[in-house]
Length: 395
Image (cartoon, rainbow, N blue to C red; front, side, top):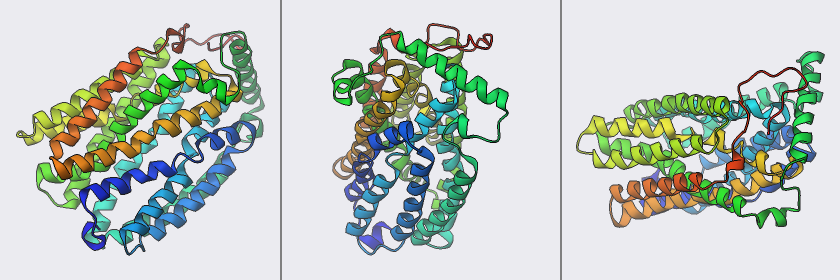
């Protein structure tokens, strides 16, 4: 692809990063639509756009077309995460929300497990154009499953019993009444943006996403340079970090829900991610030790995410939480632009090591910001306790 379109390392970083400029546009509207309208319909149309843009990417003839389509793909995907997280809040009590978030976000590494070897095989057997076309068409199956299986709220679901439905509705309503009696932001979005903790969350997410996307977008290149193997073999080597990611997400979200400690289980994965990133370069002369550290990066890759996204609901009312998630994700995901682009520039003007050290520093800053979050982010009760019906609330 680089040879066909005349793409340099810095241009590849820009193509990876410009996605996140487009990603900004529908974050807040998406979160609000999920609160007041239908998140299901929003994501359905986003998936239609995803299919079309992915197929068109397989037909590009120059890097300008690639940049435009990467930007458009960012716009199409932009509202998905705040919409899904808001829908989770519509379905799961706070005591279960960390695990619910983690299970949903876990499909990112599951997708990596599937697409890493599949992509390597398609590129080896066909070429990069067919990669975008085939994987775009595969998204049609996801669209059909989404339309058939998903409901915005328990009230609309026909596949759960009336008893379970009534329990969910009552429990979630009781949580909102409990939140209403606490110091929770229930103001305009402009007032929320003046909140110090809001900007801490944005900054934390920015440095976290810088590390995540810098790692994921450059992992195949790093593995190829480290092991000097074919793209097919690189695809197989890339599976293990994503297997580790699934284990890490389940472990840290379960521990957080069980103990009620949100800050700690955002901090620890970020610190582990930074340490493994740093050691992957330090140990580069020992190929398999370096690879083990890259797998370690995978373990911590998304482990903080499920826990992190439980925090906005602790700080903002249900009406504001959707928009707040959108702002945090939109501005924080500028790190998704900066990470790949910074790594590309550092590889071009210095070397790969400088790029990886930059990502490790970014993750260390995110870990520090997690420690500085206020104590009210934590759940004061034992989250895993099964309280009597009608009494099960979350702070």
